[in-house]
Image (cartoon, rainbow, N blue to C red):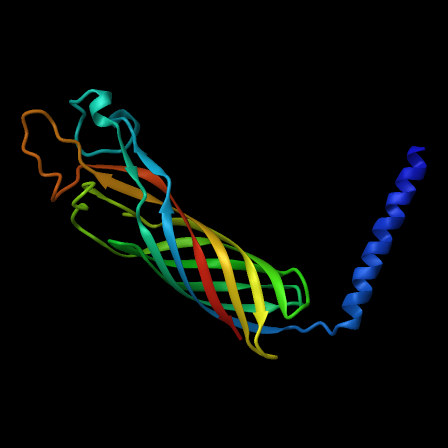
Length: 227
């Protein structure tokens, strides 16, 4: 019985692969360089827990107990991103390349450099598509003063980044396509903040004395022109 079932599944798999290959053979596969200029917007998600003073790098020793030191900061950073991708399309379904751009936050900015992997799931005028970007976010500029409301400085250091997207690729002409995708983005960086010691002046509105690693999560939408 097991041999029969295994043989049956093997026949189905072989027939499916043959059918897909036959369809691909009927449609000419095109290899070429591709370029994409994109604009994206995303909003921050999740909270950042400022760790106990003993659990992170800091410039001053602790004098407060853990209940006073612990603090939660919501990631309210918005994210505006302009990028240029240069890639190579190996066939009608897959292309890969490298991309860079400018990643603006509210009080800081990154310059991402990443490897892109993109998949077109169908060969129709409007086709589902997915992509993955993996790379590094270099620092461009950073605010020197903490935010007024939270008294923290977000995204103070360069670090690895990743972005995943799922959406539609719309063929506008033989050479131009439109990409519309929902995205999830992750940036590893650090957050700076202050711990005010008893009996000392509070300079947290202007200076920080503590730093710890942080993962910044974003969800948003990306629109790109592929040519």
